Image (cartoon, rainbow, N blue to C red):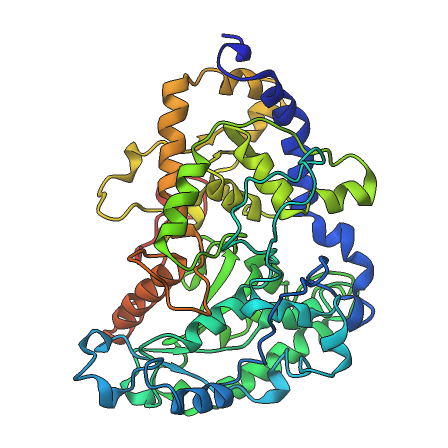
Amino acid sequence: MHIDAHYPKCFVYYLILGSWLLSCLLHFEYFHLSRSSFAAPRSAALIVLPIAPDASFLPTPTVEAYNRQRSTSSSVVASPSQSSSQPWCEGRYVFMLDVPSRFDMLRDCVAGSPLFDDMWSWCAITVNAGLGPKIGPVAGNGSDGDTDIIPSTGWYSTDQYSLEVIFHNWMRRYECLTDDQTAATAVYVPYYPALELHQHLCGFNTTVRDGPSEAFLRWLSSQPTWAALGGRDHFMVAAKTTWMFRREPGGRDEGCGNNFLGQPEARNITVLTYESNIWAPRDIAVPYPSYFHPSSAGEVVAWQARARRGRCGMVDCSHGLEGSITCRSPRKLVSLFTSARFCLQPRGDSFARRSSIDSVMAGCIPVFFHRPSTLKAQYRWHEPEPGRTNSDDRRYYVLIDSNDVLEGRVDIEEELSRYTDDEVTAMREEVIKMIPRFLYKDPRVRFEGDMRDAFDIIIDEMIARMRRIKNGEQLIWKGDGEDRDEDLIASDS
């Protein structure tokens, strides 16, 4: 069956030219745009887009500041003394540690400071509580690829490494925070290991790369909250892939990353990373932040309806740095992904990639080439559909063996052309249904409507996990490490 039987010709151009090149650019964007930035903090920028004039900055979200806010607004946080009036918090209390300022990566991000006024510094990651600059109305007629596909509200130029800041701001509004650590089911650690590592990710000796996180873990393990369970009821977010925190001890200075997750103390903490080591017991993957951060269920429903539209187009990434920057434009990327039925997701320097989340947001069927790259393998908290006991009958992605492609046994175009229009429509509908579970709401406002997002799923699963730990369960992975389905299923899923 020829691909033209079911797909517009421009889709073929996107499939062959756009997706592979775009995937490489997106996955290696750090090395393309930031490789030269390791020498000085000023250049170690996470945001490469100018700050929007209407952007709002938050102060460093310390617990001290939060406590002051809480004293004037009793509606934000529940405490044990309020449990009679808020029964839903029973068994769901979280204690948020007060991290010393010497470990606060954003301590210098205050109005008037050199870093705050530098749009290329990591202080830019604090814009709009970590969501980034708001995506404004489209300029021009759309001929340059800037289309009006993105709505006027709820969309931001979110940096892929900003989840530590976003999650911290969400936890500041979590309704079941408590000051009483003995009443807490879980302990949240508002430390930013990825932001800390980013200053000296590569090109520094191992002492420089490992030292700060080792000092933090020594402090953490000396705290009263640690004593009861040795940190097993603690959790934190580390906004990079797990492999960046698993440098082999004794490695050469020329390498990248640190050994944060290899430290004895870190092995007891539940760490939420963008890509998990699927064979490790307390290393859990959560979705990359997308560009969509709605404040109401209505915005989500409206976007799901828009994502069902059929479009066609291509973004040209072939002009060096200019092309790379073009392909980092959220508006262009979302327009590109919504224009295609299938979005290729080859692995880069690791299995998971942000563009797989972007494809979900766009209602585009992801095409994977390695089983550990699939949403089912990585996002065991977010991928399952609530209320559906058998997830095996859900068809929403394509898995093609990369070796078959490289060795010429499978032609991608021919393989995808086998799917009929009805099959594609059904698969896209499954993807679109997943959108709420893979997005992060706007953490600054009270959400209007009833919808569970990635935040809600994380806290629900984390509380359930901590209850099991406190009940004495040993949560381990099954399997021997081979790339098979049964080896990707956790006993605590």
